[in-house]
Length: 366
Image (cartoon, rainbow, N blue to C red; front, side, top):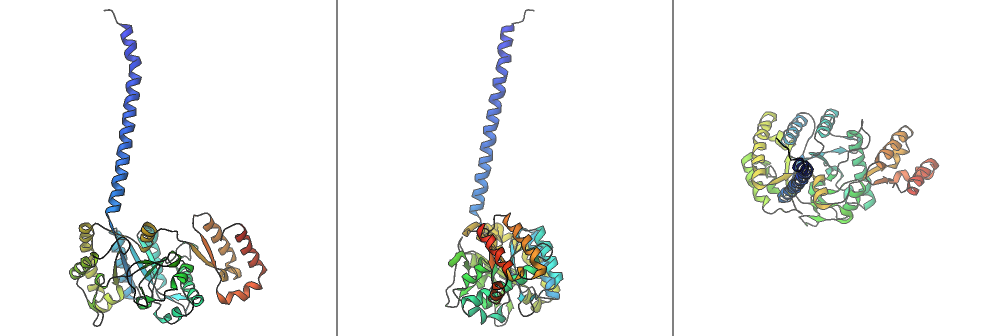
């Protein structure tokens, strides 16, 4: 049988063309699928409505265990949460125990995108926070410093409380400047003059006003707690008035849950509430996120790190301070050095600290 070598040759030459064509079509199809997936993911994200959960009143003793139970349940079910932490300035420590800090830090390390922190419980400093700006800066910087020292004992200054829950939900309008100096980007509350709702304050600090309908308390006078079903129904009503700029903010006060229900009943309340929250999330297309994530996604701007110079002026902390500065400069995070009033005199007598500051200024690090 006679073979047609010319035909075979043409077919062999044609195969690479077919292969190249198939490869091109595959890449084109893959690109279209990838682009389609990106568009679909973007559309999905844009169609979701942001919502925030603030956990207040995580105190000491049984309340700590209840707060941890609530926090674990929420993050394990893919809810972003912001946990209020109370610094006690007179004692220079948190009101929570080392056990609470350790467990929350472990939870944060496991779910870093699902947990944020807020400074709360500053009611004993209400008068100080209404004084002139320098004193507000001093108070909030000290509060932040107590938080960072407790939560970053083994890790350096890597974690900040980026939200402020002001005393009784109200603050002076110029506190935004003080908040920014302390590394705070979101204030949950309203100005003393009564203005409510979302606004972007000076220096890029956002104010968000929680809606009482989206809290577990039905009546503050009697501290009557809404049942889980009532809580979800009331939250659904509050949701109708929310927007991308003014998101739904749910407040769950662990201390009140414990005081009114006791540990076991409060745990049952939480275990009943979370599936209902899941149904609400699916039905209303909500994305529960931390307040820091909300700021990053919908307001913009970068968080920055504040280091107190008086820490540098303490001999045994100098090495840690310089190591922390070196670590921060490797990241895309601005650095602010805070000089509190009582440290100014020490600074003028400390040529080493002055030289260190000048070197950072000259190199553009601060």
